[in-house]
Image (cartoon, rainbow, N blue to C red; front, top):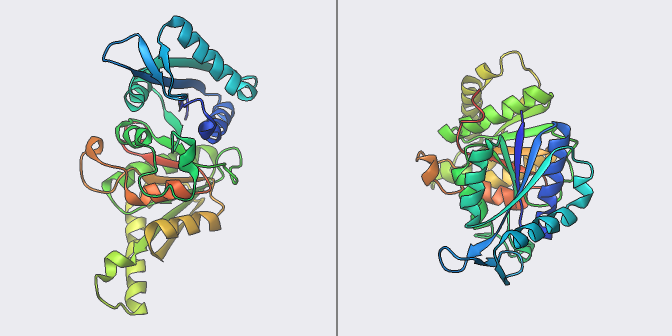
Length: 306
């Protein structure tokens, strides 16, 4: 399923968790892994001088410098590379998100693995709104393949993946995320949890609902899940459907922890707009920041509809 994986890294400790997941997935699925680093922006249009994205220092951009950067990456990820049978290392100057997307298309990547942030200081408690890196935002928006975002150490991953939580809001984009989650679950025999959080804030809109009304809405959501998704599971019966009410991102996080999820799959966005024009949904952003396991953001159906 993952023949080609692109691991986008800054070469700093903030990407260590993503590196662990990327190399492990590549090892398990015998994938061709491309480690890709965008080392900095030319200082003035086309220039032989770049500002190193890791150190902030101005460097001479030439073949010797690129060779040095690649050697540094080899040293940084030495413990993973010694057990990797197929890993190519490439580095280039440019706008990080643009170059990552370009390389993913050239590489025909089935999966992009990256961290949620590009700076170490963004991992603190005050990182919430806007802390999700803009590079990750742009990559998740424009990628033609799923983007696996690793924000923190994966404490529940069981070499990969035993329990997959698919969070749906019944949007068009959610169906692409479902295709990815169900395809992965079928291929590796994972338990698939189909989950919907009934947004009580949106439902209530100033009204007071009785418990009977809430239960009726939950049953309505269950019927919708059965109608939209179950026909595509066919003979696969290792799944579970659950609907909880509450704030969506809070309920998804609570549910994923209750089910010991080692992967959460969600739509990149929920609004009915062109994928390339969408911004990362607020719910996904909050889940990425707080999840104890990797989060797969799915935008286009290209790599998951087969």
